Amino acid sequence: MEKTFVMIKPDGVRKGLVGEVIRRFEARGLNIEALKLIRLSRKEAEELYSIHRGKAFFGELVDFVLSGPVVIMVLSGKGAVNAVRKMMGATNPKDAEPGTIRGDFALEITENIVHGADSKESAKREMPIFFGDYLDT
Ligand code: CMP
Image (cartoon, rainbow, N blue to C red; front, top):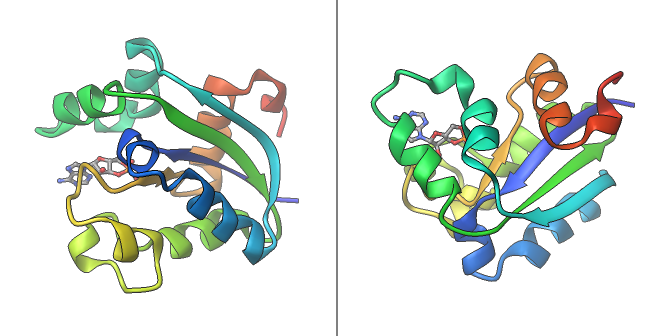
């Protein structure tokens, strides 16, 4: 069964959207394989977003995800990576359709509520940063 990595960002936690976001994933039929509320270390945040290192928004992005607790999870299901991406909506909430998480709850590109792995390869890289048990998936 395909697995993917998802993080509810500090704005999602601050806005009280943890339950709503998880409810949507569960209602879709995705299984929660692992789930934690944590504060990221700078090292973890920089590793999660290492593909964006050097981009203009990297510093702001890392500072933002360190600004409060986040909820990280591994979800599984058929086509989980794509299912989660479609449910999140476009990265920039101004382009996200109503009915998607970002389209319903966000307006700003940095504060866009949720992060999800953008491919199976990204999921395989991101899960072990936080969930060592998933190293061999
Ligand atoms: P996320 O899916 O967490 O992956 C990288 C994040 O960088 C993205 O969501 C946005 O929140 C943030 N970001 C900020 N500025 C940009 C930008 N110009 N392009 C893409 N992502 C951006």
